[in-house]
Image 1 (cartoon, rainbow, N blue to C red):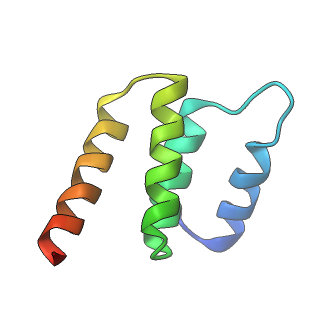
Image 2: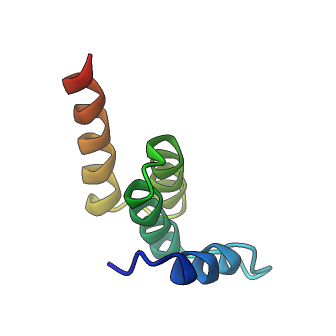
Length: 73
């Protein structure tokens, strides 16, 4: 996964494409947001990825995010 800020800026800009963003772009944005310690933003991106196309990757990432919250509680 590429997580450098310059890649994140490019990928997030691609989400504004009038043709519509891809589920995979949202999946990757979620990983980038998590790497930047934006857990809520990451979960939001993975949910959007799932809305566009169900995938085991986004489901797994959301499950891990929920597990991390439960581990802190």
